[in-house]
Image (cartoon, rainbow, N blue to C red; front, side):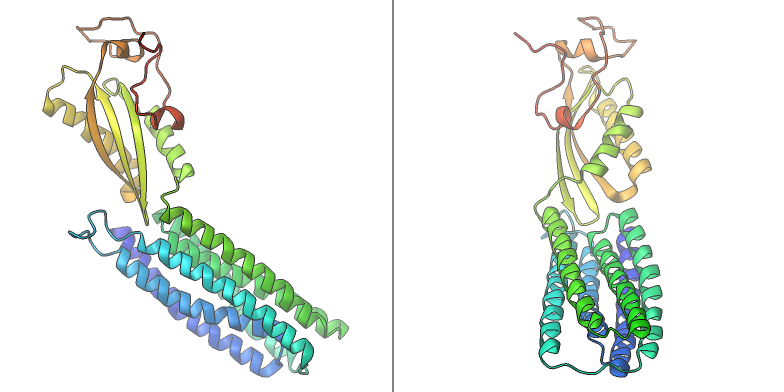
Length: 331
């Protein structure tokens, strides 16, 4: 819950920042009447709306579990990211529409140097804020924060392109570049909105976070203890910044309940140490069977029926299987 509160606090600042940057860009458009700057300002309207949506979603995600939501409220982050992605696409379409309208009814450009300074300031602020947002989002595994950070960085890239375009117009007096830049940035913004929607839908549909799971498996293989004979039937559900992992955990059959539970505690402590509150484990214990002997390296086992041959490395493929690991299938 500490990371959820941290995410919420940062999103409050991002929301306030989006309002300030929107005012700066509207001011720049007022001075210049530049279509390219208007595209930047229109996207900032989306930033403001998306900021408040992200803020609300992180507020919901930070709420503790309750009877109606036993796994927490983390799914709200994916809904927020999907809405934000949709708003980005809408902004891109709006930009293309305004560009076409300006081709029909052209407005003269003014005070490009003033507009250049104002949006240059917004670009620097956006880049720093976006980078920080993405880094904290990755650290806390927050889809909403990463979506906000990517949105800010997309805004930075589009603003940088506009700055280059305004500079070229000042030097060359080729004012048609204003509309060309606006059209290109509209398409770029639509593409980035689609990517955010795609990522959020993956979270809603419980698509596996393969990067995090690969690291999870690497840690298990590296820190595996001799009583940890087998891990299988691995299932993952994503709730915002939390991965809920179910698995079956094979230990020596002769351990009593308390001894088996100590092995689960050791496994959970390892995961907590490596991943903090990003992964939550729900473990079902199984007792080993005779065919487990060939992959069990426990040296002081007094009931071994077969000699140890070699360990089986845990991989994504064999962990998701609902069968215990063995070297040879039973006949």
